[in-house]
Length: 169
Image 1 (tube, rainbow, N blue to C red):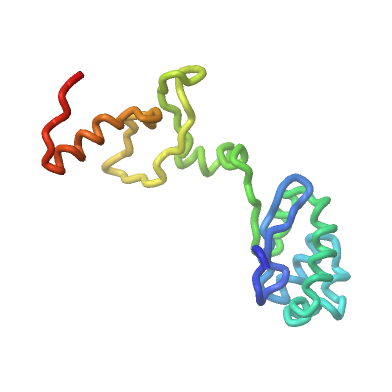
Image 2 (tube, rainbow, N blue to C red; image 1 turned 30 degrees about the horizontal axis):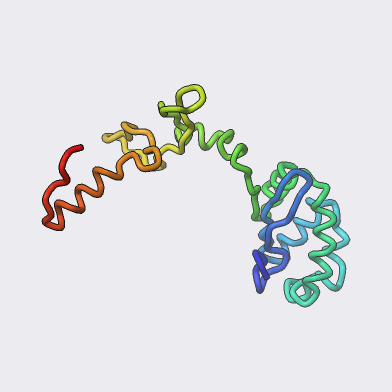
């Protein structure tokens, strides 16, 4: 069933006009509200889809209809409508949408660090999601370049294995 729920319909990801959204209709009341949100109240009174049991039995037909209806609704319009109607669901954000979000900004989750060879001299990184009031996170080192610490790590293994240190070049 992919990302569909086996016992609840509709409960899955749908393509919308400008991306993707999750629709998680959990009961018959939510289904009726969802049908209003998408401008298809007739689907709530259609005998094939009136109850969740009916929707499971006629899953393919309903999903085909919903796929066409949702394909022309903008993501934020759908999400806002579902939220106002008490229908669970949400957007599936692209990475640019994630990093442009108020939540990422409020949590300080987008950081930049100096990096050798990077255009502009720094690279964007994901900040630590853990925030403690008395021990703030500090960022001391950018990610290593490929192979940057290989010699030091191999030397540590040599010493732990009881081998003599490698002679300096």
